[in-house]
Image 1 (cartoon, helix red, strand yellow):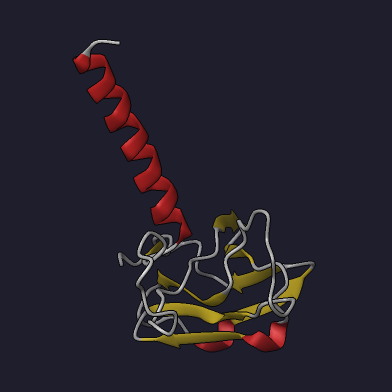
Image 2 (image 1 turned 30 degrees about the vertical axis):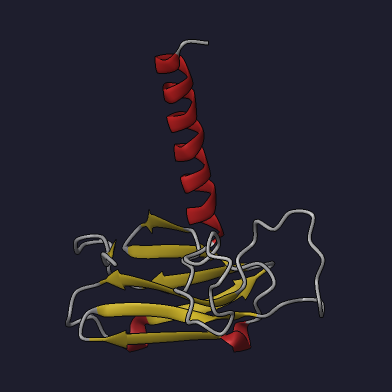
Length: 145
């Protein structure tokens, strides 16, 4: 291989490694990282749908019970937070793609939305949130990090 081809191949591999380490977490590539360092909460994937006058949010939270989830509606921000605990002690993974620890997802809703028109329940690892009468308003969007 010529030098430019080797360099291009090396750069491609470095980008792939950077992506992989980023997916593993903020200290994945740092051997000296303190294991007690704070880790950013992960964000569960969400779907937002309209059903008549209602807005429906569905968040994937497998392994998280309804009791472990906190919903907070403050000043036009709906926050869904909680934690997914480790399922076994001293795990020895061959591959780990499901995040553990604290999670948090925020959505902007109209500031005057009445929290009594919010309903939520978990079904088979999916949190379903119904925002009654909100479909006429602009759809909630995720807050930037």
